[in-house]
Length: 358
Image 1 (spheres, one colour):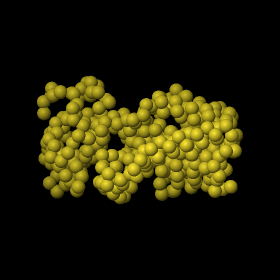
Image 2: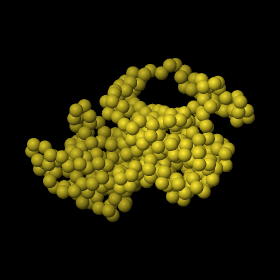
Image 3: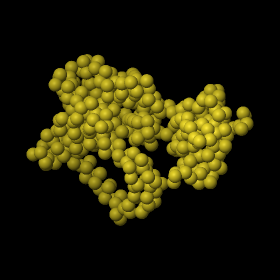
Image 4: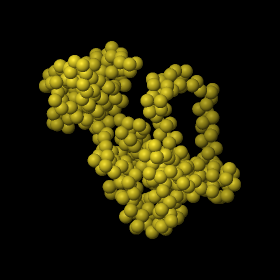
């Protein structure tokens, strides 16, 4: 491949189909050596803003690349093939861009990002905090965390995961805001819940991913992320904020439990099982938001009455059902009714829906 080929990107992963000839720029989001019968090979993942595509370099060509690392910018020549019912890039040639060439790339072409403005999402989250947290120590704690010079800017960029859900720039903030909204809706239905503690847990539960994952051209675990994990990292980072907030010890202890138990089961890395009603509510809100985002990604581009490819995290194929006529109108009316109901609740706390807990 030419050392002077163009640095402009014109073809994206989302544009590729079976049989397509490819000569394009990508970021390596994964690179792993393997051993086949005929010699060593590279298993790679090529990424841009539209998605990712696996690819392989077989021996003896693979031996021309002694080192390939996640985060490298590469120009690839090859063709799209089908392997085990999945599209894959068969690499004919690959050139690693120099740091100077990489610096000249338009990063917006390579970094998947939330469809929502980070500034607007953060402003909305702060607005919910000011509205919900009437207990001054809770309000002081959460707003000081969101306004922190390290946490605020990092939260605007951080992904929520390496691959499972919301794995893109701003994904953590999008997920946090969504979980916060879900928790408030759950608290509306079950008024015996400590609404403020639940909301605080929703805001904080995944903030440790700011230090667990490295944002940028290749999302990967930091050394601290691998050695300690986002839950323990967060508890350490929160300690001075909690101390300055004046939050009562028993409320601080509950917040710790909400964070420690939000994964729900030991199997999924939860140091503690949810032992309060609020902890259970947070776990299920967190889980449903992650699952719905996975479903949305899996069904992206699938037409009505169509099936997705096999989804490994969810362990199933997913079906896009035909929608009930005028469903969009129904959603609009539901939102209007919800907004009206929320206004009534703000004016009169006693106007909440009846709870199954009495």
